[in-house]
Image 1 (tube, helix red, strand yellow):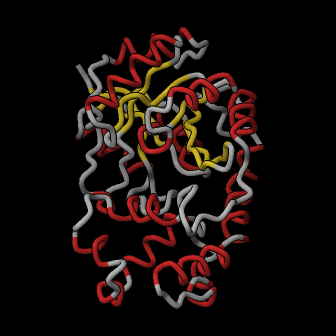
Image 2: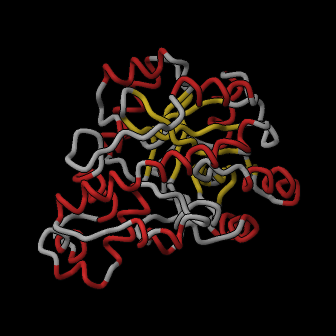
Length: 296
């Protein structure tokens, strides 16, 4: 039985290391039989997958991972089986990039106060064209600075006092909703993302919910009522308990169950392509998509 991994990132995502064709090769080496490259708010990889997938022994699904907000909480939603030439996706990346840049100064001011830093907009200007000024990028910039180790407030994230990945924990402790350096960002709403994925012919699946929803059944119910088609129940970030929780929830609500590693490459060495702890076969996964109206 081949492995399934429906959450892989190419170099079109920040920290992504490999091109689409390189990922095709690596997926074959990993023994995948069903796969998807889902970059953050960037449709280019999906277009390349659409072009090259007939030459691969693996069944590839065109996909994207969209950043959105719901009640001030940032969520990620995977779009599977989308038309990669749906015009709305061309504007998504530019909108998210602008929204994150617009609040950069407020985030830096809050982090300076919270962590005794001296960050300025000038520090980030050289990165504007190439990267999105997201909390993820800010965390990477701060923690990769050689002087960070001298800051007692940053040292635990660098020396390993906190569990990996340190960047993710840094964000959760500082810039996440409800934390001191949280700044509301004008991201697309969850409603909009779900609507546009559906208009593009795809299915909307909540990404790694253990990182965002944290087994909050009430919140899950709200999200499902807005039109989510499925949940990434199996994730490399999830504990065994979380896998079971989200599988059982999805079965009760008749939602699509998917799995994904969130593979980037060397930037997340602890994540291996295909290691999703998913026991489902390719046939079972494909049948789940079919029940939701998507032939892949």
